[in-house]
Image 1 (cartoon, rainbow, N blue to C red):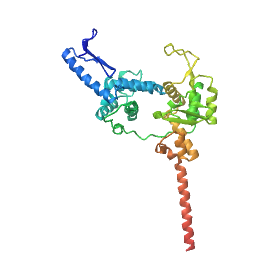
Image 2 (tube, one colour):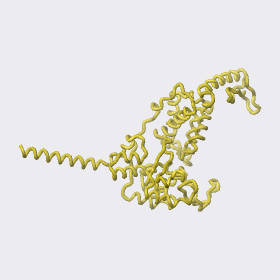
Image 3 (cartoon, rainbow, N blue to C red):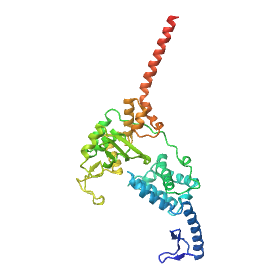
Image 4 (tube, rainbow, N blue to C red):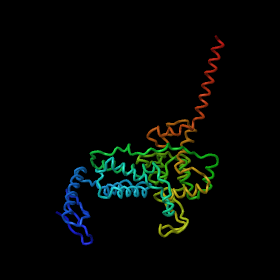
Length: 374
């Protein structure tokens, strides 16, 4: 048996190889006989792991999460958020747990655990943190269930076989119907007046393109001037495409010399050694930085109940009102299913009412003519 006492630990450790892969760790046992029994169990688990993984892929959650982040997660606009979400799963299930062992029951317990978490309020102290509201169903879905499902999906692309994958639909929490908010009156002018000059381009682009916040963090490699379109990876790792209209070209063209890689930048207002920022220098706009900037702008503008994502809703409602074409709006928003786009259909209610009124008047005239003839 390959168990041994580590000089810096009171516990026995195990260390063995199977089909070229090393398995090692603590048994958390101080008795050698117990440690050997633990090691036998680990060998059996290792055999099952290697078998399910097709002989070459580790399905330990720590390894799966790490590989997913390297291959996919680090390229997300909100890579820091992805990293935290993966780490949360690893801490909950434990690093050495096998992805192939996660069942519906385990996922249900995970979701229940996550629903008990409260909204994070940085720097507010424990007392205020305890009084913070619980996170929403949408947050549970996006930060936990969806992330775990993505790990399963990626593992399958590596050749991992699951005897019984969790039924994800049954773990998806019901979310309230998304409300559609657009800018009214002089709200657009209020926002523009409250926006710093260096942030103006990205907010103008958000309003003109209808892209989501993370999709607005463009790279120059995603801007194709010759084809007159922007193509990049969007929500759910799906390709999104936006035509470079004259307005969008007018926004982007002057920015070409500001940064070699990223399209949108900001000017540091003060020197911060910990963040390696120098006052007056330009740096790429980041996901968290843009969210923080938007909170300040919204407060200074005096606009309430309007999220950054509502720029997308504003874009869609105004486009539909102008064109009366739901299919066109679907394509502009890069929606895979037109059912997702129908939430904007209310904006043509006035046109529907006018059409009904015209039809009813026409029918009334027809009946009047028939009566006169008879």
